Length: 244
Image (cartoon, rainbow, N blue to C red; front, side, top):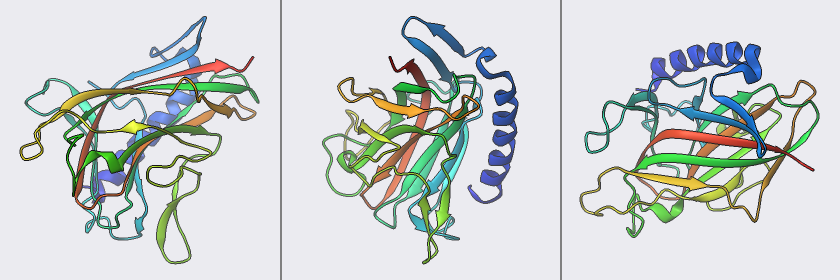
């Protein structure tokens, strides 16, 4: 359940982010090669400092929207011995944004990088299904920013992102569209399937680090369908390539 659990996980994960920032590129998941600096995260056993969040809904309506962020086992039809970062929400606003974020440190200060994403998810949204829960209107986005992505209330008490993620099927300055979460499954009796989605090579994402060599990553789904979306993130790989 979101409530206390989400705050507790946010607090613990925030501590992990701070401790990770102290070691920078000495993180065991990080490596550097001819193609750039690679940050690779497998969530089978831990969160690696990633934090979950939600936006595009009225502040204080977390229970009504049934929002959940958890580090839990994959479904039985996949590999229940592995865990993943699980996000779930009932899209009562027709526009729910569910996201993960993490700060990256140890890059060159004030330097422009091209950023490439490779994301593995477990989804039950059928790619050829229509109506509530259909995948074409559940768009996967990823991006980076030097400011921390936060959902903040507007003048009407509606929680909106403080970065430009775009809206629904359209990307923004701080997040690009990678694709949708549709998988091959029976629309009447959907089961979770693994899907890998990567950046479009013809439209690379670019970010300039801050004076400390840091940047925030964000990965999330923008939904235009009413109904509940359940999604697990199993792996995230991000490559920073210095802009030549």
